[in-house]
Image 1 (spheres, rainbow, N blue to C red):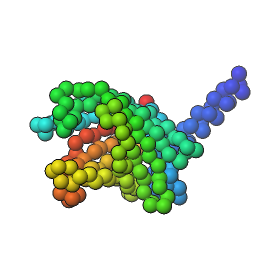
Image 2 (spheres, helix red, strand yellow):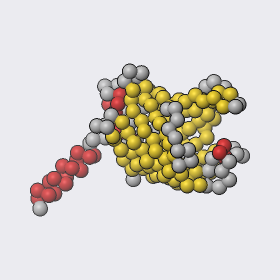
Image 3 (cartoon, rainbow, N blue to C red):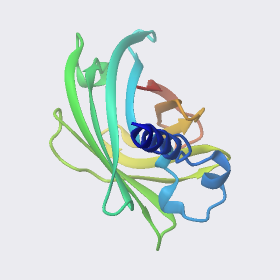
Image 4 (spheres, helix red, strand yellow):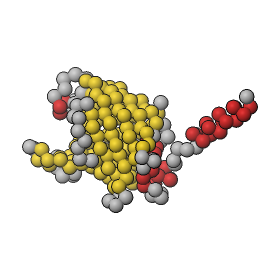
Length: 186
């Protein structure tokens, strides 16, 4: 019984101290592990911009796991969304998958997204971490011109993360936040 208790404590000790500190992520020693803070299961409180400029609040969850010997991460997201920009009049279920990896030759993270609304991997968001915040950008051409989308990971602690998606229609001079996810570790 004492051996089992000892092994349980060692396992707990190993898990409790395996979380990378902000300093180790910021040091740049191994860029491919900068997203390790996100590994685990998360409950999400979402705020999604509505057509009138207010916010729709919905719940979601996500599970993030390392893959390919820890050199990449896979996310499985599930919840309800109501995107006015996609014509949604009420909350609808959505499941999503993201893949992300650090591309050493370019020195940037690549984030790919696929969901049940659009079953395809598009162009990746690309970017980096700086000053304890990650910013990742994607430029797209539409009938109305060029748009820049920005994903931000901020307020990162061991048990909470703020994620937001913002759009710029003026070449990146200004951004409008359209989706916020406040994540709490399960």
